[in-house]
Length: 215
Ligand code: ACO
Ligand code: ZN
Image (cartoon, rainbow, N blue to C red; front, side, top):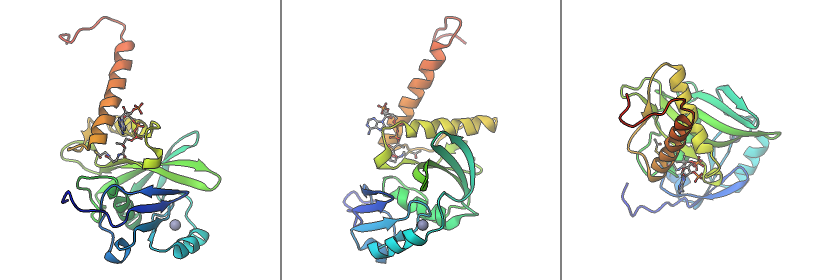
């Protein structure tokens, strides 16, 4: 992306929040010409007017991501969504993610991917807070393709939670894996922080003294 490309959509309304965008996402022209885009936090539909968004909010029957709820921990629920079965949802999610991801991401070819959607649950439904995508079959053993925490929820530990979840899935598959490179600056900071903590716990729980030269 050219460095000088300025987002035309400078803000999104998403759930209860107005969020400033960071990067350009390739929404269709008729949606990209307005500075404010409205996105349904449940079904990911994007809309260009507050009137349409208000009507949609009243009528949208969806209160959680499509797919299977595969994990629940207190108010956190994680859903596994298949890009082949829920193509539009996943494409819309990728467009949303692109507004906060500088490097290349997929938008349309979502079928080879699974999407793990993290939500905060309350009486109104399962509110999207972040996700990661993962290739169904990765020749390079990547276990995360793109990872995102919505800016309004960053620095609360959700990134670490998602990273931990991605490694647990890989462990369950009896495989090893790592995130797709290059990492963004924030991705690098988060993965470094995750591994620092993981190593700290591993070393703290060692029964025998160990050395870096040890086998
Ligand atoms: N500045 C400094 N350190 C940071 C920052 C920051 N802005 N963000 C995260 N970190 C480091 C800190 O050590 C932090 O721990 P601390 O808050 O206790 O200091 C640690 O990472 C973990 O923070 P989390 O709260 O767990 O992570 P968060 O929920 O904020 O999500 C993520 C991290 C997903 C990278 C988020 O910043 C994001 O969505 N960024 C935009 C999209 C992106 O760049 N994704 C990664 C692309 S690479 C890839 O997809 C494989
Ligand atoms: Zn909706």
